[in-house]
Length: 593
Image 1: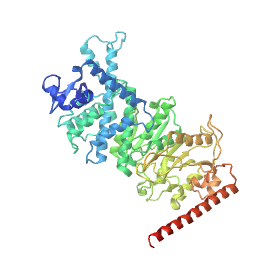
Image 2: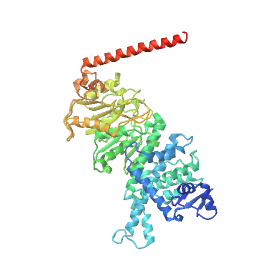
Image 3: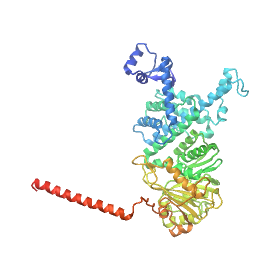
Image 4: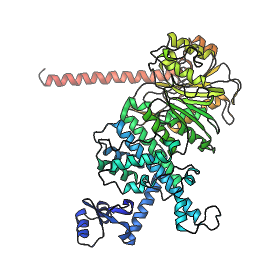
């Protein structure tokens, strides 16, 4: 018999609530004193059979948990995400993390589209029962049921239609079955069949062939069933997005260096977006989009600035099929859509004619590539062909090529690109002489998961003399942020919100944006340099070369007084050392040495 497990509680949960042992609860059930359904070897107790006060305790507990999750926003307050992650990670066993990632994130996506479907279904049900609604009202229950299963009424609202055997409530009834993997794969197939234009080839169908035990898969479904917010789907969507991002970050950390291929730490992305300052109707390109985090952060920026995130024209390219699926699911969970294409950006530019208002990216660092695969007249190669051993300046030319006449690019580069000589140094010189380099920010090490490689953020501007900011032709802003960070673990640091605003505000002031303070160079932190100064420094873009050392704070004590104090302290240390020597000598004599 199939049951909806959300309507029941387990023996363990009942025992905890009443302060009894599980054996005591099982005895009550076996003696017929407590109603229960036997599922496999275990019992489930229907909530409706509980006394009213217990039902109220369960309801209040759920509401309090919901409130606690929703109110947590700072990156240290991720208890709900952490709790879900800890539970999911505990079930992983020996399965490779790269495989487990797709299993877990696929289930999260399935939970999201099911709940979006249920939300729309509730709306339609209410509309069909409202006599004042001339478009939807029907008296007949059969006609109403037909409307609730009409796909177009979901798709017109931007919601995926979810077939009955793909809905979360149905999947919950199958969690104890040995064929749960087949049930999930079939659920994914059915969803793709009904939403081919948006989801064909996107959803993972890996649950039958995985070595993960069927009981573990069932438990994962149960864990994610806890994500429920009393039909307030807008809040649930936000939480689901946060959970998806948190899980991506945890998987990236677990995979180490490979994790950086699909996930850029949030604080880096946030800083890039704060400096680019995107707006509605902007055309955005990320040609190495990973799991789509750059697009998500841009959408959040628009929402924070009272603009419509759905009006971003999103264009992304990703060379890894599995990662591309993660990106499409990530966007869908956030209610975003766009063109995400599969292909290697070096050789298959999927957007050859796109002129983007913003290019944002974290491309592979120092990657080998094959210049011979490019056409002789490739329009992107305006500075020269980079060496086969390092594609950094291939990426930079790709970004510059796709900029609209007043477009901006913000991207991550390894620090080596700032000062490398030879062929790449020549390419960097030409880029600088073309007056495309707007801002360079050096970052602290350990920003990436388990990778200490130091990086810098580069910003290009296509039209410094006539874009939305002050005329700044021939100028470049250098920021040294190597000492600006918060340590969150032995292996990782982040930019916290205050750091991000400190850096972004320096850029805004330098650009002359309204509402900002007058820009001033700050020793050890920021310096506005001219093309002539950069030329004198051999076209090297390392910020530390320009900003210099931070000024020492004047504590009001003269140099002579400081020296006198230090001298007295040193003499005192010498005297203590002599006393200690005498004490040691005396002890040695007493011991006969």
